[in-house]
Length: 251
Image 1: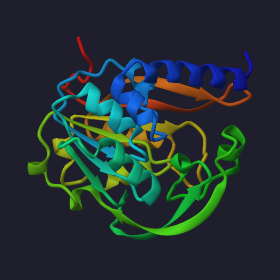
Image 2: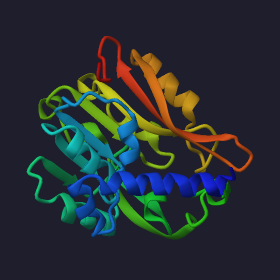
Image 3: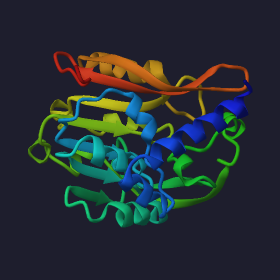
């Protein structure tokens, strides 16, 4: 099967998954498709805090609200349009807190590269390999956004365990992790989309991110949703890391 055929099949499977749940169908009316691909990850359902770095329109937050019914959802999204959609779709959820910021290693104002496909936007310049592998993700404009360290926004007391940190920030994953110093001890598991090749200029690749977790005493519990380029090279995947002694997967 060709790469385009694989992606078309993936989109159809996602649509079928979205149509199964009433709350997902309602969100689809607002142009928000829940990230049902994460249902393939057998995550335990009793997470009580979910931090969503790179929340975009609430695709993962929708999934998390359904999978983790007791969890507080802390969503970080610097772009106005997708953030407004997130609030429209999930605003009735009392467990939701939305922050107008990107997460990174330093709290500062920074240039943000806005993609034609807003969920491909990044603090890093969009590279040619990203544009080639994912047509329609070229840079449309740049804006200035607020970047915050996670540990300057929340404290350990704000995080009811167990805590899941989800990171989908288009190349800025290591920066998010470097901004967690004083709260990292309260995080039990991290689901991070990371790359095997440089899609965004200067991004940390999976080996460097894996090294960060190794130093923190976290181990990798699995890899899902691996995507491939036209030459069948691995591009990126969803990696689940967890603290030693904590089991993030359902039995």
